[in-house]
Image 1 (cartoon, rainbow, N blue to C red):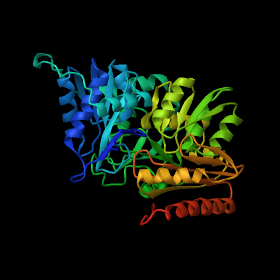
Image 2: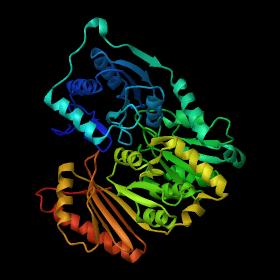
Image 3: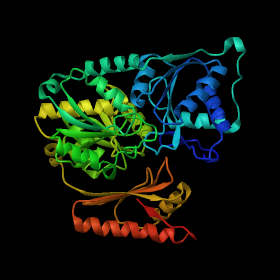
Image 4: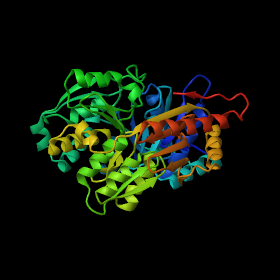
Length: 465
């Protein structure tokens, strides 16, 4: 259940819909708090393919309408398209029912402001205050109950595609004639990508392309260990590259033509370098590689670090007027299109860059220093994960210490990050180094330190994924 006093995690509100572990009344109160914040105006309500999405949609539009708010329902569709339409069609706010990359028993909401960007941390706190204080606006007379309409998804796809192709020169893409492998994780980008690519001379080999809220093909989080099938398919089909999406379609992890999965901070750097000019700002969270800093500064740009979470990256991109923002998990934010991460637009940008550079993805990746990287996920409560991080902050690590989000320590040849997950009961650990000796030494030091802290808590054991 949600911690008292806190609803929002790194990206939205998440719940686990397992037997006896959720309260429908909580959902009604949450919808009432959102309605009180929105106050008046129309809301665009979108949803993904999760088994629990339609029940949540029903609760949300039912409660919102009783507070006098008109609700347009559209879906299933990817979060980035919902976000674009929230702004383009002039809504007061948007609500997306999704749990993004989480396993199928999770679901929740992401709340968008009128600009189609997830609301700021300040607004999240405002909604939480309404929820926990119970200070809801009055429900309306039956004559004033808000209207509920259901919008055809194709209307949204058409407007989204028209805008995207108006700002991307697609002629190089057409000439190249790409062959790509796309792993859709049985979710919503299988609807969007095929629609957007129509007429662009791109052949798509689809994996996990049928919609299924149980995500039978793979875990909806695109991580290298989940993408073995896609990697093999890229090589066996002689594709130019592969791309794997998460559950709501806002993240894209790329696979080069040799079948190697490339983390998002490296592909984000490739895209940033293709458009960067002297003095441009690039925003990325503390979970991203130090290679980002080396490459961007080498091209005359400046890196701005943020907390982990696309909410923080998006708002910093807007605040700083940045060229772009990106995350190691495959989220890329291109404000010329819309200042949110977007898997489909990122795929188009990658094709554009590869066409213009007349290069293979592996070749562009090889232009950056090679690093050994480990991204560990240790199962434990978020409360315990926070205590571990605080204990580690008390040590003298001998490097440049950054505590924007968890504990990050930079060295001349390596770095590491330890932080509690904002969406799951996990401690996340990232370790990266330029040599195997340094990597093994640093990994041993960091993981041993974590295990020592864990032993201080009676009966606690860790499970490293």
